[in-house]
Length: 255
Image 1 (cartoon, one colour):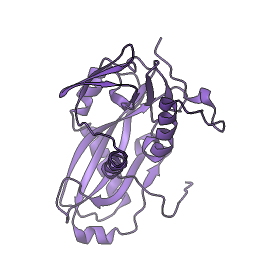
Image 2 (image 1 turned 90 degrees about the vertical axis):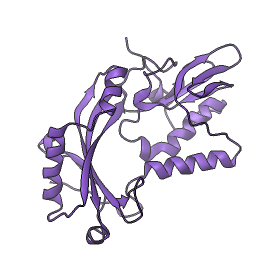
Image 3 (image 1 turned 120 degrees about the vertical axis):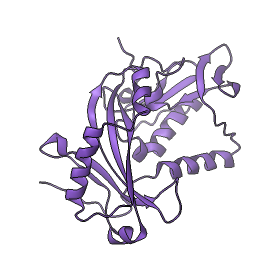
Image 4 (image 1 turned 30 degrees about the vertical axis):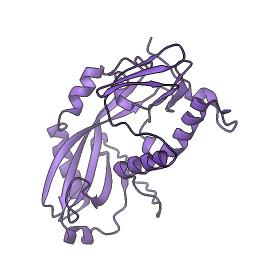
């Protein structure tokens, strides 16, 4: 077995903290945050109409960063050439003593000889939805990799708790990896990774006033600031960086 260990600051990204930080940075520059579900994005003459469950917004330009949900609404991103991986994740609640015992645990991505043994794991973090003395550890794996799915099939998957057979396999892997693990509760959840044919995200114009940044290929959180800068620059009409091949990010639609 070959392994690579990267010392801090390598690790994992807390998505909730990341989103809060990005929102705070935007608000500090005068942006308005509208927490609403979008039903359609329609480009017209002189503006883009964004219909939400709290009203309609008229925008000069729109950046779509909608991930696996790109086909769920009437938007210029519907029909992009995307594949998906369905993930089951096991979430384990830990108390303070067990967190102390596991201090120093790194984030792990394992690619094994037997694909059924593949997994990713993040070390204990504070439960974002619980009390300060509750911590959670996450282990997950894709079960259906690079498959074509309809928007309603993705929505149905997100409403499940994942696959119980895969959850049992994740339990086996976790207890082999962390002998004597003591938890105070556990549950499973579902997730999706979005893939493009090139392995690079689609960062491209979909119209005169709409741009997309879609298809993270499993790397979106790690690369979000840089990818966001590319997409925002395209939206604002900046010159594309000459250090990066523009063709790698051209959007493709299904035939």
